[in-house]
Amino acid sequence: MKINQFWLKIMGISGILGGLVLFAGDMLFYYHPTNPDIKLNMGNASDFRIVASGVSALISTWLYMLGLGQIYYAFNPVKPLLKYIVIVCFGCVLIAFGIVHGAFVAIATSSKLAIEYNIDLKKATSLAFETNNAIRFLVYPVFGILSYFFISLVWKRKTLYPRWIIIFFPLIWFLLKNNITQNLPNHLWIIIDGGYLNLLLVLFFSASTVALWKIKK
Image 1 (cartoon, helix red, strand yellow):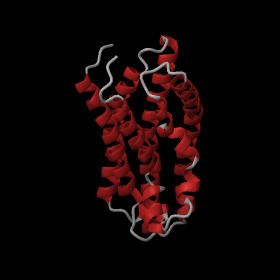
Image 2: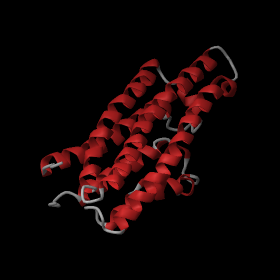
Image 3: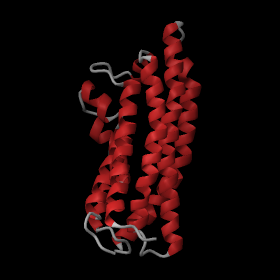
Image 4: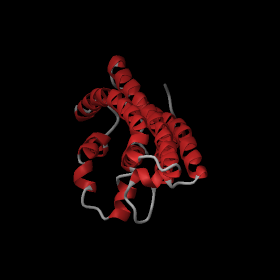
């Protein structure tokens, strides 16, 4: 599959935009300048914010999937079986980002109804949170497989990526999440922790775009 430099850059920018759109969706759900209580913030969010945030999941997934073409390009030199393992796993993870975010609509609407009708907030949102967590647990093994093959193939110089791209691969920063966010003040915590996963993909696609900016296969 031949991809010229113009489309390679468009794909990278698309991945970056996908992360920024879904980050904005995160903030629409539960950003508050002082209150770090995510459930309470979602319950007090306007109808427009909840609907717009839900729609952002679809838009960002489209953008993420276009960005996946850049990774396909970088893994072109890899043996087909290994390349498609990486691409399929990465695609599954990117789609899951949109699905998990979309599932937060149930949490937001449950929180909103709980506050409106004076229902216990934890009980009202428990089923929605349970569903959201179940989706996440299904994605973790796929992310593990992706991480193993992505990191090992890049380290062995089997791809078009330089080794330094591993530093920006989401796994490392995902594992460091609590260390990075636990001591942040409330107004920063709600931004960084709330949109953390999508910020990781913004970081990765930015690094990927830089790494492949002038490369010629």
